[in-house]
Image (cartoon, rainbow, N blue to C red; front, side, top):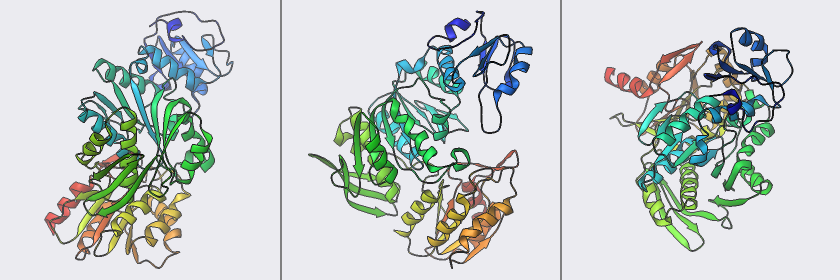
Length: 477
């Protein structure tokens, strides 16, 4: 594509020498002759530091935010936004041919998007999904390592969705993606706000910055679906403009309300009320969070034009989401639950859920990720200890940090309680200990990994699928 064509819709300074562009990148390691290199400032690196090297390697243009004196530079006010627009232009602006439903919040994004995708598919719609576990183009699953893809990957994925006939895209929208303008130039039919609690402060620094990043999604959305049982949800509803649809399990003045809630080990059942519309909802994942997640998904589908009654029936046929309150079969007199909970609020929610049906002890096994928000580690330690009968502190993804130092941070919170605990750094050994010491009717929670089938130690991804680990330990007993 010609460079001038790529720059359509972008305000820039500098003399552009038009040429054929073969590729776009923001990674200095991928620069090749005839490409555009976007200088993006990140947490650890600033692409502007590699501008001269990119020019020397034959880049057709260098996208910058300041005059660096590079001969082929194009100066813009924000390289993140400009790069996003160039990527969209490169793939023929596929978002213009799709209807977007965005879901943001600390917890619940994966489940809400999956339910919406499943319901729309049951209604014979062709749907794409972008999310934490995987990306999907109708029935085709594509592995991913980010909740929301990078600028170029995002547009490439949208292009493929359009080419395969997708009409809708249901997307988990991360705060990082919003802050970095990865989805700039995308307009949303509906955006859902689930909740907000402490997470990602290694990146955002404060809860206010975290909230403001999330809020950006609603500036580009026609309709907002907001949970009023969350304090940040109430704030968001008071601050944004446009059509707002609220939901609650506590506030009967909300647009949609859940009543007569029943939670069991097999799932949740409740009545969803919206004015004159009423209907029973059954969702196969236990926990109060499942009430909120299924409500949010149901509302989004109704706002898209689906029948209220059909939506509720479709939700009852949705399978549980992998790694979200997932039951791992044991064939024994105790249960094991695998869940992705990796924030204080997420951990408390899943433990509350287990307590609602557990007949024995609640045994929690968890760790915290390395190279991530250190402030939440003692908070999670205290939450896990206060809400379990026995605690096993272990590793999650230590990355480049010493796993024992991460555990020491967690223990600052654990020691505020009187809950009995053990520390076992090796996660497989920790799971083995939990199983070997399980008692009748216990529920063992393996928290933090969820759908992940790996553990990141140093810079390496090591195989670790908790389902397989449990199966092998049980077979060896």
